[in-house]
Each structure stands twice: as C-alpha cells, then as structure tokens.
Amino acid sequence: MKAVIVPGKKQGYRLEEVPDPKPNKDEVIIRVNRAALCYRDLLQLEGYYPRMKYPVILGHEVVGTIEEIGENVKGFKEGDKVISLLYAPDGTCKYCKIGEEAYCHSRLGYSEELDGFFAEKAKLKVTSLVKVDSNVPDEGAVLVPCVTGMIYRGLRRANLQEGETVLVTGASGGVGIHAIQVAKALGAKVIGVTTSEEKVSIIKKFADYVIVGAKFSEEAKKIDDINVVIDTVGTPTIEESLKSLWMGGRLLQIGNVDPSQIYQLRLGYIILKDIKIIGHATATKKDAEGVLKLTASGKITPVIAGTVSLDEIDKGFEMLKDKKKVGKVLVKP
Ligand SMILES: [Zn+2]
Ligand SMILES: [Zn+2]
Image (cartoon, rainbow, N blue to C red; front, side, top):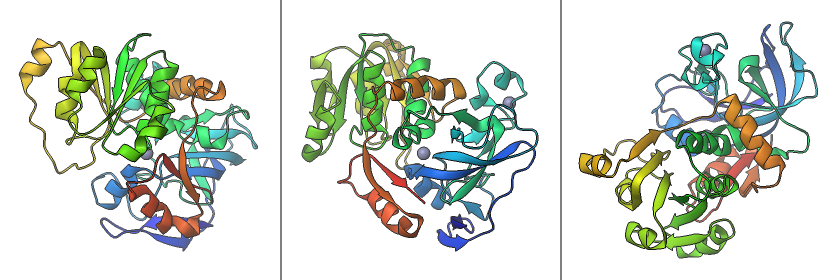
C-alpha cells in the first residue's frame, strides 16, 4: 500500500510503497476513508514529538471501515465504520477503568510509537476504537479525535454552562471554526476572533459575534462577561485571552503555534480573577461518543478547506500552511 513515511527526526516525509498491515490478536485493519492533516504534523516533522519511533507513518486523525479483525477482538466486525482516539490506551489501568484513558501511563500514540494514518490502510488497537453510526458523514467523523471531541472534552472540563459566553481565538482555523460550533451546540453564546477581515463572513455563519484584530479583549468585554476562552493560537494570543476573561473564567489552552516561545504568566491575573487554566490536547471515548451525537444531529457542520489524495500530500501541506484557507485539510487515499 501507499503510505507517507517519516524516516527519521527532522528528515521530512516521503510517499512510499510499504507492505499491507496485518492485525495482531487485539487489533483491526481499516481501510482509510478519510485522514486529516493537522498543525501537529508540522510540529512532528520539526522534531517536537520525542516519543516518535522511526520510520513511522504520519497522520493521527482517521475514519475508516474495518476490513480485518484480530482473533481476540470483540464488539467490532468487518464493515463497521470506526474512528480512533489519537492514542491506544491499555484499557486495564485505574484511569482506563473510570473512562479517563487520556491519562493512561501505558498509552501509545498513533504517528508516534504506532504507525499513523496517511496510508491506504491502517492497523488500530481495539482499545482506541470508537464505532461511528453510518449516518455520520466521514467528513464529520474524522474531525472528532483531534478537533471536535477534543473541544468537547475541554468544555466538559471547563464545566461550561448553557448561556455562558465563550470566546474562540484563531476562529477560522481548522480547530477554531469547529470549536465555535461545539460551544454553540452546548448552548453557549460565542465570539470568534480573527486577524483577517476576509474571514469574517465565514466565521459569522457559526459565531454570534466576530472581532477582528490582535487586541481583542476590550471589545470582547463590551459584548459580555467572557466565561470561557478557547485559545487555539498560543503565545501570540494568550495575554489578550487572559485579559478577556471575567471572574471565574476558564482558559482552555489548545494552540501552541510556536513551541519555542515562552509566555510569562502574571499570577495576579489568575489569582484576583479566580481564573482556571486548562491545558488540553485530546479526547476520550466518552467525549468522542458525545460529540458524535452532536455531529449526527446536524449541529456541527464540517468545514473542509480541501481534500487531497496521498499522491497530492505536498499540496495538502501547502494548503495547511496557507493562511487564506478556512477549515480542515483532508486526505482521501
Ligand atoms: Zn490533530
Ligand atoms: Zn490505562
């Protein structure tokens, strides 16, 4: 099969013909319906993910159809549509037992210790599988593990209440445009922040208000008390994100566009305003199932910047880096 391989640290990627994967006892083989490109892929190529084993197949977001199952696999059969968490938990530890498998010590990451999904087929451990109803389109399902399910988990951890106001930075990005929709689906009033005037119309389709500019906190506070900020950018926006929050506010820090940058936190902001900072990067099965229901009910519209084949993966990465694009870039092998 064709696959996008990362041969070694900071060595880029290449499209190669590799042997088809075979399932071990507790694994399934899926045909990849859709994979999704993610800013994390670029960080992985830059060497920021120390757990990567090489060579490894790149890509960590997938929806597929089961083609083959290992002998110990229960609860899944050939023909089932599934997504995978970003990691395979062991399924047996104290965290896994209470449904917080994101904290599993023995979890293995796809596109890190395990091969990822920019390929025609992929091998998945049964502990990472989540079944997808056939009425959920592939474009909506592929967004769950790293985008919508991840946001859902963050808002759950932030204890978002209906009627609260949520501000989303990087609102036209692949994460931002869907974060707006998840927050809306959970009953929030949503403000989208962007630095580009031409993105306003698309953001307005989903958000109640749009603010344009890098200094957004003053304008945001005039709209309403901001209860939750979903910061999908990182060091360029965190200062304004914190300033935006009213007392008791929660900052969901998701973006980290430039990991080489350091932010110096003024403790007064969080102490005097009772602010909670929630660092956050993934979803559990419970989150995935919750957001799949919202997706199936039509409350989340996938915003797709474009879809490329494996042969066009270079073009996919160009689209990912293109500041003019809105939404996620998908791979259809
Ligand atoms: Zn991702
Ligand atoms: Zn575990």
